[in-house]
Length: 137
Image (cartoon, rainbow, N blue to C red; front, side, top):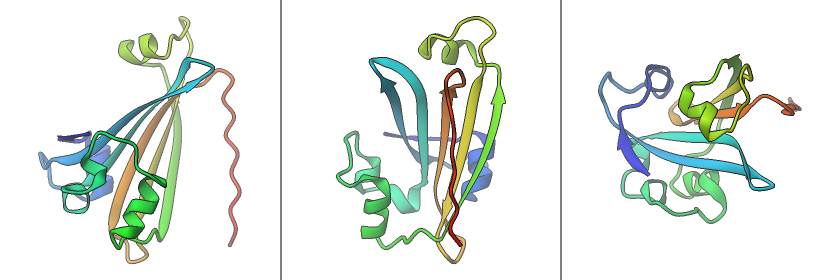
């Protein structure tokens, strides 16, 4: 957990000013001991500073539970999926073969009144990955 200047697409999603720091939680997801996903979750400093979101430990019940306890109810979740060749760091960390691509899932979570509270960027090995969605209205 650290304060960082986020990538431009994250800054745009969170509505932060250029150069403004946010809190990031970085995680590595494993399946059978193999790294299959890199997840970075970004939070506006006004939301996360001084909370468990800014601490380097697991959050009991997860970030959504803590956000709710802090008074931030999830209203809308918007996801975008794309695919691209990996960076050299991603290729090494995910142990990808030459020519393998990654899937990028970006998730922006806002309150019901549109306040951005979290943006997660998940970079996944595409091989063997399946994404399934169900939306209830």
